[in-house]
Length: 99
Image (tube, one colour):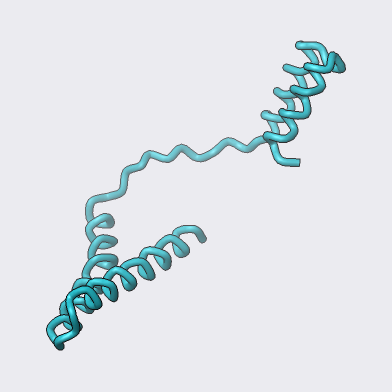
């Protein structure tokens, strides 16, 4: 049973009078103690890695869109192609970091 549902069930039992406040708190603490500690996310990325990721994500769509536009394809189609390539690269990057 998901964590939230377990606590909601306990809350209903307390509201019904089946559990006292102290029993509710003890049961809730037992549930929360089973949850593993999350790693702290600092949110910082080394500058060089951020620049490399930006280059991997931005340069291919710019180059492809520019080449397609230079070949005489209308600007909107070239832009759409560039954005589509960017989206594909971002999805691939996300999946790679996801594991």
